[in-house]
Length: 191
Image (cartoon, rainbow, N blue to C red; front, side):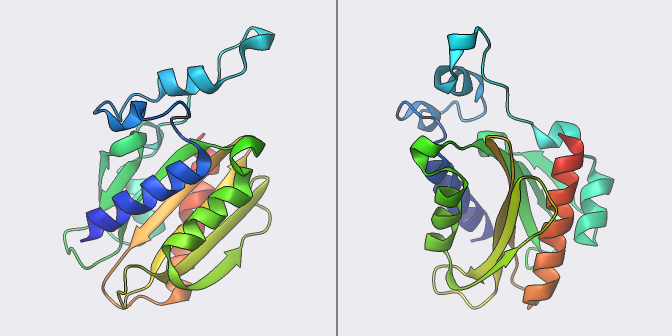
């Protein structure tokens, strides 16, 4: 159930951000290669290719993510080059961090936030001051579930560094926001 929630939220975020821009290229089985999608969406009028999105499983260590989460984790690269982490206990907090491009043509950062808000019920929005160009964490329930889940992002230029957390162990809003904020800071420092 956790992986389905994370995959669903990543897809919502990617769609809200316009990831894959030209259609179904990322759904055709090559989800790990964002380079061609980023290049096809870039503005080459100045003679430069669009910047490649950070691959956080290459930039972060297991120890860094474990310190932010407060428990031992394992890391694996997932869809859209998201860096997924989990714990031995499947009810404990798990999640992913990643990056998506946003621009004004697809609603920008506000469109990304709206996509997250549309996927969670019983929302609580938490703006985060002093991180990137803008940052937020949203907590709520997913699919009629009772456990709080979390999604958020930090805007850096035209890219949102994302965090998604899933848990079924009764963690509080404050605990989840604290973990998400630590992870977002890690992403900004690593990129």
